Image (cartoon, rainbow, N blue to C red; front, side, top):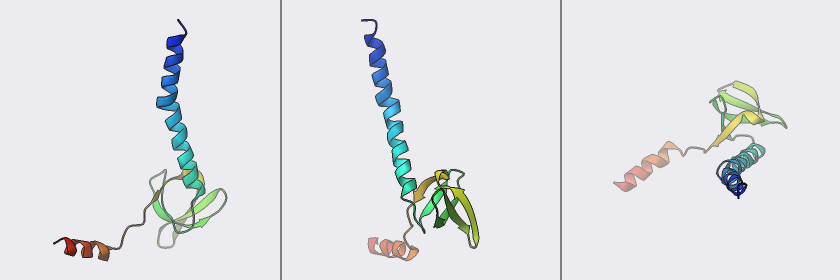
Length: 97
């Protein structure tokens, strides 16, 4: 009986903390492995840019015209979705009126 509460606490701890963290790490690894040229990304340092080259361990990020930095693949925090052109937004607003 003295061991049952300890086991229950461990099971709760596993399902509330460890398992979600493993799932998030797996999703991050899949995102990193799917990086390709011209993807819009955000680095762990908060730098936004476009990938111009993708190597095994590094990627080259263009952060401004003719300004490129080479960073580790692991330093990519997220992919950004390409924003829609401004013309489409204006057309949608006209249709709503």
